[in-house]
Image (cartoon, rainbow, N blue to C red; front, side):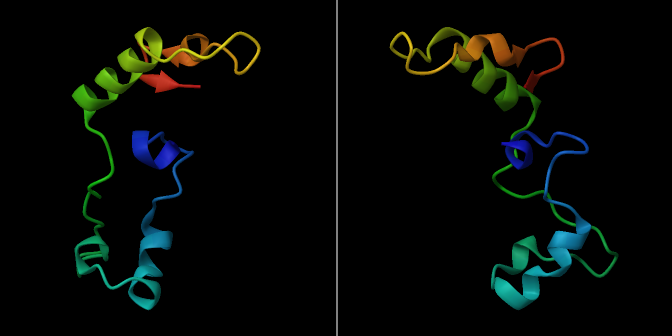
Length: 83
């Protein structure tokens, strides 16, 4: 979830992990560029998509009583976070 929402300090998608990619992954579009910058991955959500995802969790995701906690309690729309 942290990589998807790009939570600072929590995501595992960083330069160090990207430097290992050429050894284990053939998708060149994810590899680090010569200027040591990593391209934005396709799976990372932009701000509008994050808000839509969190809105969906708050309004539409429901579980039977006692099956799972109420996920809307973990959504912080002001910070665009899922805690």
